[in-house]
Each structure stands twice: as C-alpha cells, then as structure tokens.
Image (cartoon, rainbow, N blue to C red):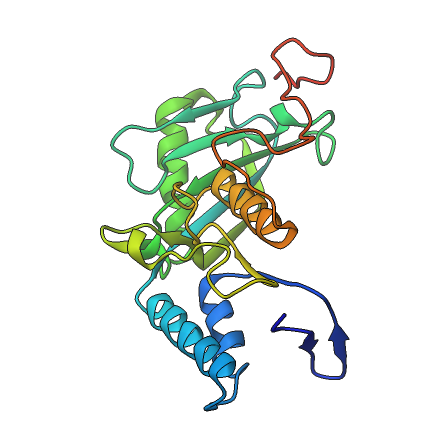
Length: 241
C-alpha cells in the first residue's frame, strides 16, 4: 500500500484506497507535488510513474462546449417539436425543445429552447448577442410564423475545458486505471477506456477503477457484476416524449 491519506487544506483523510476521478489537468496538479524526490526504491518508482503521467497529461488537449439557453413567452418552436439536427450550421448544430422533456414547464407559458455546441473553441469569445442572432436566424428559417414570440431571458454557458480531445496519437497518452499502483486508481473519460470523451466512457472508466481497487477481473465489453438490467423500450419507466 502506497497512498494512505489525502491531505486537504485543513485536514488529513485517512484511507485504504484512493481513486482520482478528476479532469486530467487537475489530476496532474494534484500528483505533481504528492511524492518527494527520494532514493528509496519504492518512492523513486512512484515518482517516475507520476512524472511520466504528468508529462503525458501535458500533451493532452481539451475541447470546449457552449450551452445556449433561450426562454420565450409563448411557443417559439411548435409544442410537439422535440429536437432537430442542423445541416451546414457550424454554430447552431442542434435545437432542443426542453419543454418536451419536462412533465410541466419551468414557468407557465414559458418555453425553454436549448442548443448544445460541440468543439466550440472558435466561438468562446463571441458576444451573447451575436450567438443569439445566429439562433434567431435558424429559428426564423424553420418557423417564421412564430417570429413575434418574445424572448424573455437567456443564458449562455461557456466551458473551455469541457471534454478531453481524443486527437490522433492521444491513445498512447491515456493511462490504465491501475497505472500508479495497487491502492490507487485513475478514472475519467480521458483514461484508457477504448471510448472517446463521452458519458459512456466516463462510466467505463469508473468501473475500471473499481475493478482495480477491488482486485477483480472485469472485461469492459461485458456487463458489470450485479449491474441492473438495461431498460427496454416499452418498460413502465421508459420515458417517451
């Protein structure tokens, strides 16, 4: 056993195992000063592993996301509309009627329209008004008859370091959950999951970390032990919109 505690600002947490489930740049920041340089073999080995991991992390990239939330007094998109994918629209890539996913609107008479923007690096510095103009242009093309519906509020959420970027050659930089040793595991969509930066990859990374800590063999292409059965279309709890 190597790691036996986690040092916080005001306290020390004693533990038998540690799982790092943090973005890769945060993981590197934590680990960089966790082991003092030493000639003791076990410390020297751990220091070398941390140095390699931090070096590899330094070569990894992020991609940003933008979330566009627009609120209307009335129906800017048809009530029965759910979502659409845009063709040849670099910024307004998809449009969602979030009201269609809710059992009741966030406020009576208010419609919530959202747009998720992937790989949004080039748009991070755009002003809110410019982004909203692009949204208005698309909505006007799709539903000109609703052009007079008033926008009453908006929220633009910019996340520069939103997702790990699985660029060509990055596979060799992604560590296994067990890279650092017996009682410490690494989790996150940026680790070696055989998936890109997705929610599914993040779940798989967590299971890889759990299997390492529990010292069990698990084939990541097979269900986790005692995993709940997947819901099937038509089940009582299967949501429909």
